[in-house]
Image (cartoon, rainbow over the protein chains, first blue to last red):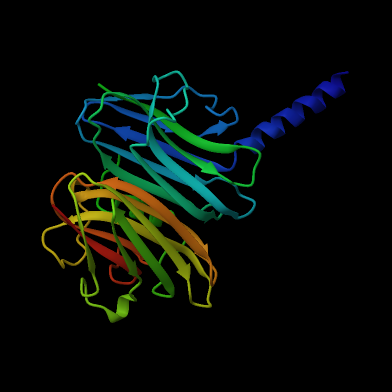
Amino acid sequence: MKRILLIFATVLCAASLARAEHFRIELTVKGTSDEATAHSDTDPPPQGTQPRPVCHVKRGEPFTIQFFFSSNFPHDVQKNVTVRFFVAPERAAGKKSPPDRDKPPVTESNFLMDFKPDTGRVGLRQRLRIDRPGAYLVKVGSEHSDSDHEHFAAVDLVVD
Amino acid sequence: MRQLPFVVASLLVLFSVSGAWAAGFAAELNVTEGKAAQLAKSVASHDSRPGSHRITLEASVNGAFTAKWNVTRTDPAEAKDVLVHFYVVKLDRPGQAPPALDPAKVAIESALTMDFAQGRTSNAAQQFRLEEPGVYLVRIEAGGDPDKPGQADYAEIELSVK
């Protein structure tokens, strides 16, 4: 019985490590008086396992979003990966809610590229201003990475 | 948050193995705002004067812009750890050479590094808004090195925002 439990635990541990190894992400939202940084999370579940950091800005106040998205997979090139970044309205902050599909994103960028071990990476820095108060989801994540899961980082942006 | 000129590109190059390939890429850049659109194709760095091949798109303040770019390796030799750098920066005057990327003047900047065998492609679609009237440079560069300007193949469009 002990042996079976040991094998089960080893398999669980190996699976957990395998899920964590594809991409390393750092996403930062910085306003005049508040800042939040999120790191890599996994999908599934679709909204991840970690709570989203929250950044507050005032409406009309300029703020900056920056992300770095790097390969953390040592074994091979990950080809034709889509990296999708967007800022979109959501119903409420901190609820792990999906973006509001009825409203268009504030901004969006999509990259199609290969990720080589160690040196494959993409980064973005963008200045924005939002005039409509509300909650917004800031998210960058992988799509079509030829894996059973995807990686992302997300911040809740509250425009007061 | 780190805020330096060439912030994104510099940080990516810093961690890359080589990141500097002089030529051998074809770049295409398509910028749209509403019904207005312009397409620019690549100019090899060694046969052009800054701004001499630039085409202009007339656009509206606070318009919703989309820039779509595509970079393809044309040279038979595989290029390793190539830097692909995209940015939108405000210029002081039309036709100005690409300026230093002062974060206060850059609306959006992105960079990626990957290997390009012949025919290998990377592309992106990036949305942005420009809230002040003026002249802006939208530019995609492939194979350059931020510490040695003028080595990349590039495509660029000037935006006249009123």
